[in-house]
Amino acid sequence: MRTLLILLTAVEIGLFIGALALYIHWIASSLRRTSASLAKVAFGVRAIETQAAPIGPGVTKINGQLATIAGALEGVALLAEQAGANGASAPGSSGAPSQGGQP
Image (cartoon, rainbow, N blue to C red; front, side, top):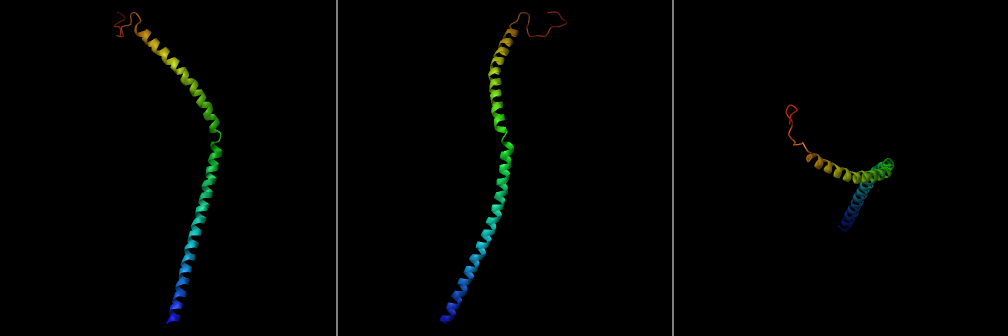
């Protein structure tokens, strides 16, 4: 009986080690696939970085030009408000359309 228990224990340990080996193989295979996918992703990210490299200096230049335009627009808006105020108070302009050319 004791020999049978030792034999069954050895078989159980063998099955356990086999199952562990199988799962370790499955995990290693999964990690290899993940590694290949990550390599493709890294390659794509490098390609995007290379393609987008010229954008940085261009954006800086555009931002500078937009800041200049924004500064000028404040003055233009002020002039437009002044012109609108002067046009509304001009003599003879009642805002109503004239009929037949007569006031």
